Image (cartoon, rainbow, N blue to C red; front, side, top):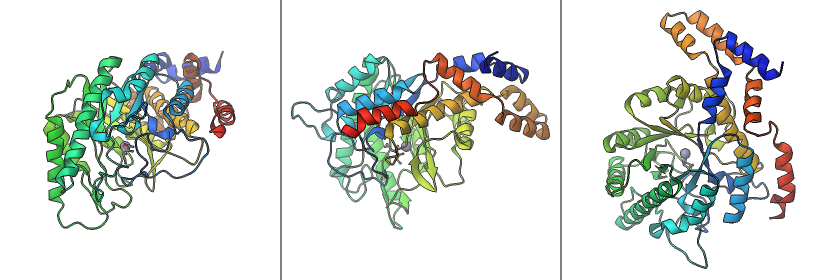
Length: 412
Ligand code: RNT
Ligand code: ZN
């Protein structure tokens, strides 16, 4: 018997069908952020990364051109099993022949190379307006700025992005999730917390009142608790984003780095699912702050996956990754993090959920604890390896990474 067959029998004895878990995992799409490849730099601006987010590290071989980034994405994706979507930021527009368009003048044609890339790989594309690393971010404010010209610029940028998102959906045949996140906030105690939020609301209204096909473009709104240099006040707080999403009928997005350290996104998912058709996630790993470390196969990642699976919500949650580590091989960072999201989903699919729920309903909490602990050492690794084998992806990838680093990255 192979290790997988033994594991299959062990899981069967616990009432879990490994075959159906593997089948379900095959159909789960994870939207992979392009910005791990170049430390959130993009191609359209010479500005340093701003907006209260930060990459640290200087590992050699960062992609600096569209060709390099695409090659690196290909390398990473070849070592990530299962379905993927490409998550782009507007700052990754590709200009040809000396052409340039500012963010308020972006057009679908500036993304045609990405469409070609995605189509050739049978992938959909998700999108993000880029409201940072740009001179029109004035005093750390964009859509909530008191300066009308600043607001107008960013409103137009977001409207362009809705149009580009619709273009992605039309071209790929796969709906596009367009996530709005603004960095706006204050470093120190503001005197007026209301006015910026009111302006943000009005700006969002001005963006979303444009006509677009809601079956093709899912607009999401991402909240945040604080940013670097924006510690005292964030305009797009959790309450703002959730209330706005409800008011306008768009989709709320939770990034698990955007809450107080003991607040868990895993605990929020069930409530959100009760009141929303769809929800969206940015899966990341905050360490002491919103540090965007590479996602590991850790407790909170597993707990988030369990909540999606247990609540039968695999088709209602847009799952995306969002982290950026410049201190290690960036391609390995991509693979490790996205694999861990998929690993956590498989781990969740291999739980005897019905049985556990029944134990809770009967208040058999002793039995529940024992079973939950038992599942932690069930032969998960053998099932994961079997899934990788069926997806033609190797278990180990460090040799491949090192080879690519030697042959490609260090020569840049
Ligand atoms: C920032 C948000 C946001 C960004 C990306 C680059 O804290 O998490 O999602 O990370 O848009
Ligand atoms: Zn995020």
